[in-house]
Figure 1 (cartoon, rainbow, N blue to C red):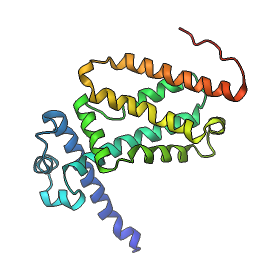
Figure 2 (figure 1 turned 135 degrees about the vertical axis):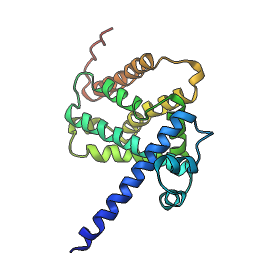
Figure 3 (figure 1 turned 180 degrees about the vertical axis):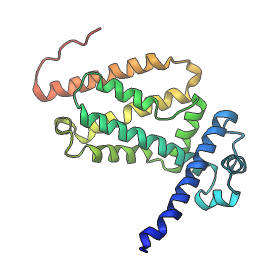
Length: 209
């Protein structure tokens, strides 16, 4: 039997254990909030020992950061796939905004806790996702890549996440998620139209009201 075949069951069990730990952490975070979340509670909920928790994660924040990374990676990949399939399709920007807004499931407090954990573990989180997003587009969305300078790509990848993170932190403002999505879409659409106009010299058509 090959080394790869011998290792597969162990790797599958490890992946299943990590899945259970992350699912338990999310469920407890939703139910009890961040202050009551402990590694002991997560272990009990996941049906594993506390030793197993520390086999894979350093502490509670490490678990939350891994959960945040899993959610945001899935959304980033979904956005890249959307842009590749419909780089100039109608409603593409709004679809992207909707994907970003769903990047963290659950209540606002849960989403804020996950985003904060990700940034505490690595303050270059946005940079990593920016780089990975551009790598996913490489050679697959030529029309878009042609007008994206590093500065423009930075704005497109950072602006929506930064604004939505601020909205989560400043939840006492009572912002309506649907209206916020509308305005963020308006902002990015205007920016993309301006980029296209800069490249072609054409006069942009007025945006439908």
